[in-house]
Length: 181
Image (cartoon, rainbow, N blue to C red; front, side, top):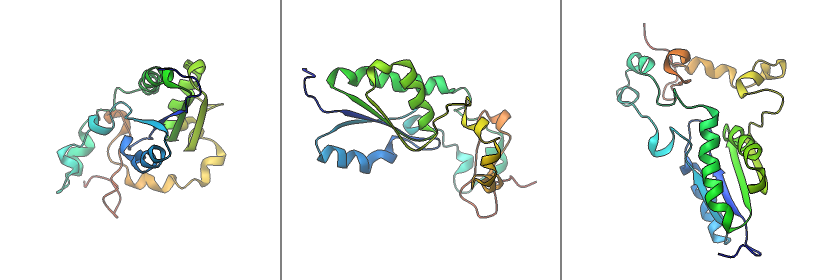
């Protein structure tokens, strides 16, 4: 296929706790405007996501707090590698515009640094763009983050992130996420 005067392909990257499905309304609009697009499911998300029975109704927060996450072994490089693979597949068809939301921004930065010759634009939508620190967690330790609205969400945490291999929050309760004693 000739890439002469080809329009861009938008590669859409979701954030933590989400999936490629979040992009469906945007994908419809891009398609209606004649733009190619591809929504990525990062490792451990989308059809590969873990939805353990303990989280379902009725909830068993004690069991859920102890069940390791399928995200336990997933590192940022795995996300970067997944997106790089997609970029390599779509790049022959024209310019590539990477769009990332939330934690997906960290993958965008990694992809841009890994294959800059294949990426024409990076678009961050309310996304992390870690420049001076290695990860969002490091930024959260800064004084500027003290007034963030993420702090109060800690009451929703379930289990020990070190033991689970990932942070886990129970958004299905108004009482906080702690497992009953």
